[in-house]
Image (cartoon, rainbow, N blue to C red; front, side):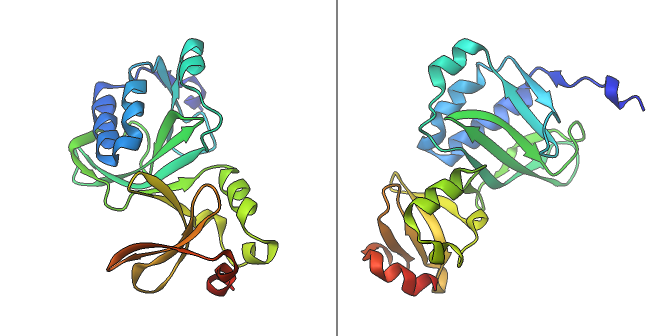
Length: 209
């Protein structure tokens, strides 16, 4: 009954900041500017969302005026694994981004029950995925109603290859996949040998239907 009196906000801990800096660094150049944003976090909110175990960042109004970009789609990065400093277990972490701003992270463990070990970060299974309505709006822009029925929008994720984002639409044989870019060009991406092959729009249905 006393849960309503628990503190719902606090400062970003040093171990959180250090770990997030290393995660962004490991994720590559596309995340470098988020390292800078960590220095502007005034405080973080705790479990103030319908997302379980969410730590959300709070910034000042001038910060949003400088960094916010509504043209950048909202996304999240799933599949991050970080060790717990005090217990022999892994913490599953999801990062959230909106309008080009890092807005927080969630974990599979209760907030306050762990501390990140910045020496044990695994991004090998990390996937950038749509968040909110972004996936629906982008996919609907390039697929027909019939094609949309053959996919699960929630399964689409984004792969950055040679500095360009490709939207993973459907898994094919041997780890290859059908994808498209931000302007609606479709490709078959193979990994052995590595190749990005542009395909005719009319042939997309052959892979989906």
